[in-house]
Image (cartoon, rainbow, N blue to C red; front, top):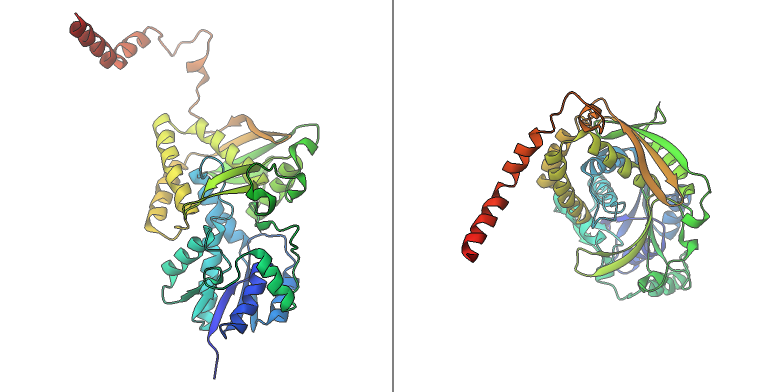
Length: 402
């Protein structure tokens, strides 16, 4: 009798290695391991080999780095979406794409279920499952952390040792990490106490700011309709661009944040995130928008950015609202074309110059010198009308007091 098939979101790490064995031994499934390459620095041959050695009937390595950048990162960049003013959503927008690939392979392999290693306390369980429900609600979802009797990663280490599953984690160093081409996150371990300062050895994609080089680096980012396309005047593909920016920004200590965030499930969590290249792109894009967007459009877009960030954080990528917000954002990006010069220095990342053929900055109007285009006397009438409600309120107040 053929066993039912389950597609497992597999990384080769502690949790998913234990889950693969658990799905076979405890639930009796045939397990198909799927590792989606979104730019994490893994040895994928070793991951595939480990999947088979741990008992997978099939193992897929799916390279989606370019799709990830162009279809998920860049739309979020154009939207200016930053969760709670800090988090550049590195894990959040990777999960819908990973889940999409899991669904595609489940359909291809005639699997009846998809399993993931997200815990019952985190956001990722929602992100995985919201995507699966949006794309194929017939598939069963198995979330072992919500149903098995293993209560901690220490328990997982004991389980792995009992079943001879090779793992890298120890009980002394037990950070939970998630990496892709955009960022790496660090949670758990000594970070669980927000009074503990994170240690320098946590860094993977960047240097601590204090250890960065002593001279600033200047780099010019060119945009076309809100999408970064050049570095220092040279046209460059999205994947190579992010790799180069990660390297340059990382060596300057740029893009590391230590935050306490509000999870979707109702609790606060603490994480350290490294997003070197992404931080450069976000700051450059923001500076260019200030040059080319009018006040009302920029203000309303900032409002949209908050909603977009929450939507992505909550795992609602495959929704009509996200598509509608993208339509608005894309209109605002029609003139977001130009070049921004960035200065990177010991953890700081700032725009120091910008130019665009669509710039709304007009030196003739704003100069403190003599000009022929602006009559300063006109300001008096403008102020009189602008402050008319204040004037009327003051007159009425005087009458009432009199």
